[in-house]
Length: 266
Image 1 (cartoon, rainbow, N blue to C red):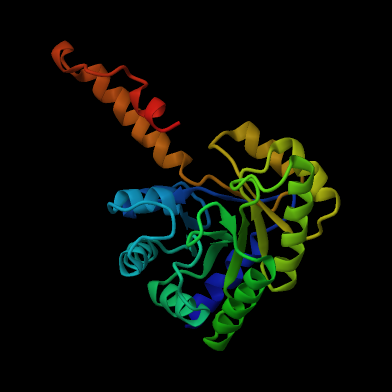
Image 2: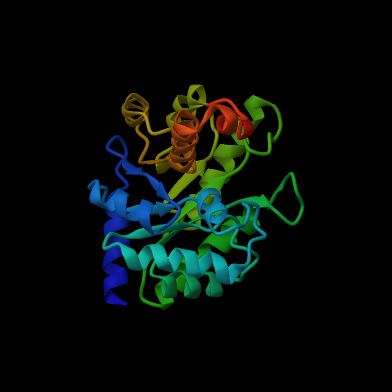
């Protein structure tokens, strides 16, 4: 357990506003190994990409045993810390989330506040804060100070008008941070809103971004502490494969154009 505790501490130390942790997200062992071999100090999982790879879908309903088995395969394949996207926690109580996460070999997690039991809704913010606090406490009870990235889905669920959406995001961020979240992750926040968010925010901010160097540099200049790529890498690999196969397929087999995969996944 001391190794996991050290890995969690290392992961936490990499969240530096203005010099962010750039986190390519893996979906299987080969992608995780490529990320590690490229020199990245942490491997994160993308729930959407990882679940697709094992035949399930994002949305909080995947079989829990399958989810943590996939995380464990990735964590055991690499030597760097692993942080796992756990969606909404799959309905598990905080102690079981922590036990399964640590048993899989991961030392951090994303927990989102979408309510997958009531589609289109968010979990009550105070209840989500209590859940985050309980996860942190359960980790400490096992000797590992888990790194919690609190995903805020106000933009995913289009909560209120854009002005109120920012205010609600800030309110949730404050609650989650007070509960022990190391970083908040208002996924899909428009880049034009990041400056307004940061103007009143002192904690760590995680932003979703494509694998583009200029975007990464620009987001770093805003003072973000973590940049995740989510399913962008797996989508790029799939698109590359679709384009490659289109190039080598005989004319009789070319039923779709080279952009068919990207068009189908917009």
